[in-house]
Every structure is written in structure tokens, then in C-alpha cells.
Length: 203
Image (tube, rainbow, N blue to C red):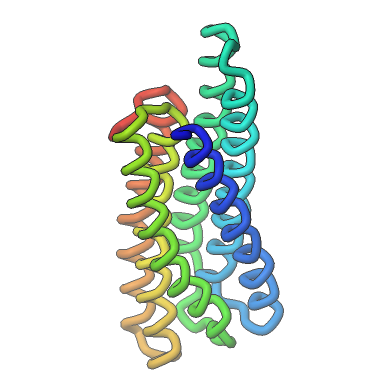
């Protein structure tokens, strides 16, 4: 039953994460904010990682007699995809924060709406995965909990930046908030991504 709950939660993650890259990508056609561009890259990488995790978790749930070495290898593959997604997101955020123009304009409302929804959804999934992992410790669920906490932090950063862009699109405050916020979240993403790739799961 616990496995079913984990599988359903992962499937829900895939379904709810799927529209993100599409909507933010469409937003890029209306505006040219680098914040939205890096958000598109991040969401796409994270969606791919969640899909891999769901496929592996589903396979292991249906094949409980899987050899321990194969099980560990599959879990490592799933967690490796999450770690890579976190590193890609972090590197992209740092690159854009350091090299983007201070005078970008455009319609950032679609990205802002997605970011706000992301804050709520990622918070709920973080709580859900943390609870599932406490009740039934699992390597994949543990990493998903960490991923969703990182996603929550990033969406908070993106939300604050885009709100400021909407309020004062030409203000210098936008640049510094974006720069500082992006660097802090990027460092968190990269460090945790590396730890995840190395198999050092931090709960």
C-alpha cells in the first residue's frame, strides 16, 4: 500500500510538472526575460528527472523480487537523473544571473503565474514526499523530497524576481535581487545535485 502511495505521488508529480515547460516556453514567445528562459531549462530538466524516477519506482514496485544489486543500480540511475537536473538548473541560473542584461523587458506574467503555482504545488509535494519517506524509507522518495524542497526555493526566487519586474521593469533593484537570489539558490542546487549524484542522500 505504501508503494502504491509513492507511485501515485510520483505520477501526480509527472502530470502536474508537465504543463510548466510548455507554459513558460510560450511565455518566452511574448517576453525575453532571462529569468523565464532559465526557468524553462530548469523545469524541462526536472520533468525529465521526475519521469525517470517514476518509471524506476513503478518497475521496482511491480518487481519486488528484483536482485539487490539491480535494485540499487536502478535507484542510482533515478537519483542520478535528479542530481544532474539540479546541477543543470544551478549552472544555468548562475550563468544567466551573471551575464544577463540589466535592461530586459517583456511580458513576464505567464512565468509569474507558473512560479506562484509552483510555490504552492512544490510545498505540498515536499511535505508529501517527506511523510512517505518517513513512513517507508526509500532512496527515490528521499531524493524527491530534496528535489521538491529545492524546487520550492527556486520558485520563491523566481516569483520575487518576476514580481519586481512587473512592478518596476526598469528599476535597478530588479537586477540585484535577481543576481543575489539566483546565486544563492544556484549554489544550493549545485551542491545538493553533486551530493545526490555521489549517492550522499541528505534527509
